[in-house]
Structures are given as C-alpha cells and as structure tokens.
Length: 399
Image (cartoon, rainbow, N blue to C red):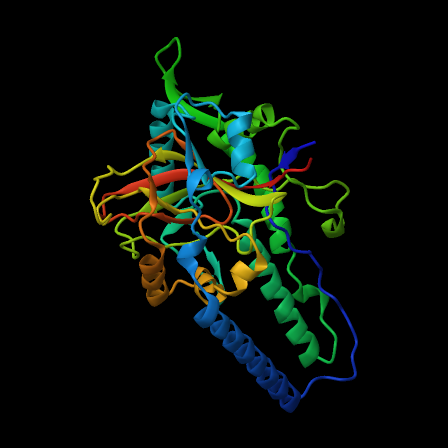
C-alpha cells in the first residue's frame, strides 16, 4: 500500500522554561566547553578529509540510464506511473508542460511581481547553511515566512532565554517572553495565506457605469497541484499536520503551509547559478523530500553553450548517493552544498561535468528528486524577473 503526504520537516516547539538553578556556568567552564567542541569538530573534519582524499569520487555517483532521466509529460497531466518512478528514485525529475494554463500563469506572475515591487509582504528567502541562515537571490511573498526561518527564529529566542536564565540565576520574568512564538506566527500566517491567494479582484462597471472592485475566487496553482496529486496518487495526498508532540495549548493539529510565491530579480550575484540540494543524506527507497516549482513568468531563455546567458534555465545533476559510505567518502565536498561559498561552487562545477537542462516555460511544473543537484541559472539583466510558486513534498512508498 502506498501513500504520499506533503510535509515540511518540523522542529519540536517548546515554550519558555522558568527554572531555578543554584549552579551557573562560569567563564572558565564555558571556554573549556568551546575548546573541547572545537577540537572535536576539527577531528571530525580531519577524518572526513582523509576519507575523501583516499576514497572520494563524486563524479562516480552521478546516475546513468533511466535513473538520470527527466520524465517529460506534454499533456499537462500528472500520472501515477510518472510519480511512482520519481518517488522510487527511478528518475531524476518530472517536467509537466502546461500544467497550469500559460496565459493564466503569466497574468498571475505579473500580479505577484507588482505585489513584490509594492513591498507587499516580500522577504528574502533565507538559506539554511552550516553558518546559520543566509540571504539569497530570491524573495518570497506571503503572510508567513518559510518554516525553516520560523524554526530558526524560535531556536534563537530559546537560546536567548536560556542565556537570560543563566544570567539571572534561573528566573525569567513572564513579560520577557514574546506574546506569540515564531512557530505560532507561522501557523496563523498559513491560514491567512490560504484565504488571501484564493481571492482575487478586478475592476468592473455596474448598470450605472460606476467602476467597482469585483471580488472573485481563483484557482491558486499550488491548490491545483495538491488536488491533482490527491487524484493521481493511489492513496491520496494532503497537507501535513503539526505533530502531537508540538501541539502546546492547541486542541487540533494545524496544517503546514502549501507553498509560497518566489521571485528572482536580476541582476543576481551567482552568475553561473548556485548549486544546491533540497535534502542532505543518502537516498531512502521508502521516502524522500521532493520539491515542486510551478513557473509563472520567465526571462527569455537564450541558449548558449557555456550557459552564461541561459537565464532561468534549470540545470540538473542526477546525484545518486545511495549509501552512507557514498556520503561519508564525499562528505567534505557534499557539505559545501550548505554554504554559499564561491570556491566551493567552482569546485562543484569542475567535478560534476555537463548537466541535464530543463527550460521551463510559464505554466510548467517541475518536480525534483531529493538528492538531485540543481542550479536555476541566474538573471544577468536588471529588467529580468523569474516568478514561480514553490513547495516541498514528503513522499512515502511502502509495499
């Protein structure tokens, strides 16, 4: 029996703990802990560097044959056999052409770009790296931040409260705690975002030729994706819910977000694009974190051998890390995927060789396998925009 459910990885939500402690760490203990931690990290890095120098071979992990293929569907329909191949890691990507009506996609994309230019709820898409959250070339729109940002903010507040607790001998005044945690703000924003995106407006005239704003409901692209995944996959699909362990003061489990609009505005900093991966770790034959992009507006793709002018194209390397040993012996290079480091990016381009290329057009859906390395070729001109709606999906396959 198979089932798929869209989920974003969650972090346990904890409230502010008011605790009493007669033992507060002194500066010597803190320095000792930091020194030991740094020594341990240095030893681990040395071990992985030794493994990669002697056994590493990243190009050998690039899949060949059917597993490296991008499935192309030209009729705009999600099909169970295509999804099954992707979810079993028997293909790298699924490109559904004209999944969303092209004219509707362009119109919606232009509206979202105007919304971003007005400053309506736009935020920089923060990238989770080994150094923490870092800014990127992408902005998101919407009533809530991405979940990873909410989790990072929540963890930061918890760390600050622990520090205050130590400094004050274990007592934190209630008024110092925020009225709402970033996690609560996220879930409340999710509900507002759903309602906002399903309602649109246009100007019209009544019988007396008075100009009025007419409200109407629209089919949001990510709602269409959820509906058709539910229809295509044998056991259905739906929004993930908040785990019971995190439902503090909540009677019912709240749904995670269904995705957000993303906009890339030229000129961007990574002229050859930023190689990244959506899920770190070996492929699991029973589950995976897949990503979905529905493209709305695209810059004109100008085919070029070196790719420098192929603005908006999606470059894909079908990396097949299928065991922990494969991961460990290439850990130093693979870990660079979590850092926006120019030297590491040059090294990855040199090792990976020529990519598979997908050139999406407005209305196209692209689903990607977890381990696939991707680059959205960046925009060189200030007048170029790329607008899409994005979500992550957790898929499980069981016999």
